[in-house]
Image (cartoon, rainbow, N blue to C red):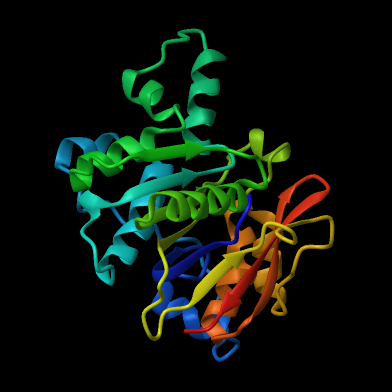
Length: 270
């Protein structure tokens, strides 16, 4: 990187345990309202045709739910948006079902299970639901997947000078996989990143080429419930950034990325 990567955040979608959408979650993340424990309520993707709606898995439903939230306040229609999809492991429930089928006497795997097993399934359903033909990038970086997706989206905004919709999501693992990968519930976040110059009232993030990668500790959440979510679900590593945005803060945020390496971004309030 030779120059800072900058983007405005024009729209946000959020879904997680006790967090139904960005508007409901915002006062909770700002410390102005109490968090109430509840399993993630993932809505059916109304934007999909009925046949595709029946076939899509939990990861796709989570990704499309936060995408649709962000699109409600986005100045651009979804069919024109480039996108970056990032997840630590894709559809965990579907993975469990495939493993269960392979361990059975039948060993037959349905075509629906198979096509939902690929990491780009949510991206494909996104294209079906919106008619999007812009570039869509799909990546995975284990527990650092949110930071990896944010870095990719910022680079695209800078290089292509166009908006990019970032979608990060994870889903729960059933037993026995839960014993090795204890992700307890679904969590998704969508950020619509737009190039500078910044319009009034829109927060902005900056990644400096010198200080953007650090071995310093990641930021944590002051609220113990949010910190528990941050540690338990890889996509929830986004919570320190979301809390800063909810509070309207201007400061540096350090996010978990790779082993021994974190991503430091500057946040400017709108």
